[in-house]
Image 1 (tube, one colour):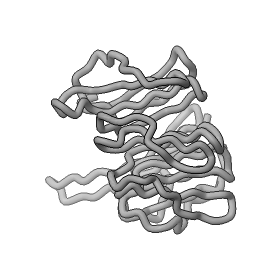
Image 2: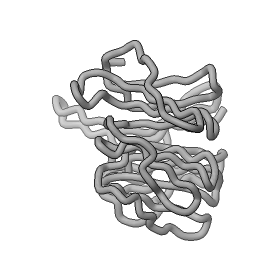
Image 3: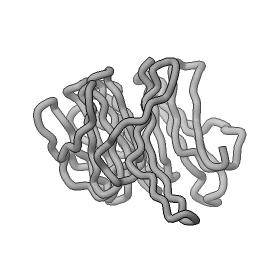
Image 4: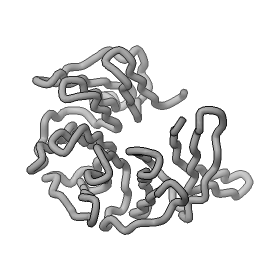
Length: 220
């Protein structure tokens, strides 16, 4: 009964701009929210009905407290592409030029990713298990509670979802052709490829359990 979606689009034919879109689903219907921003929103993450974060273009960061959305300064990252929280006191935001900011429940601070490529997505399992994905060649980064390091590399990835420490999926495109999708899976020890069944680039993935995982991408 608590589902969130964010985005934005431009209708050039009619010179119309629909930006800062936030929708919520209560189990019956979708409702539009006032976001107070004119930026594209790229990602949203909810810990509970009173702790929801959304991020987007032009360093935009928004927070929902159960009543209304407001802008929050989290530190400058030009494009904030992904947000994930393991709880209200452990929130990560990733974006352009390898930027990562972390919220401890009181304040935001930068964390060093060690790379300069854009980070596209992040998934936080707990304070010591956080994965972020980036453009080629960095691939997957992992945070162990102390520092970030490259866990695997080779293909540009756009989305990541961690079910538990032994079930993590990441999706993107195969860099040699830039025209076929890629799915990689982490079993707690190593990453391996999984067949996607599509040649279209994949942008997002979400796992509800080990046997129910969804991925979305180009062309529906």
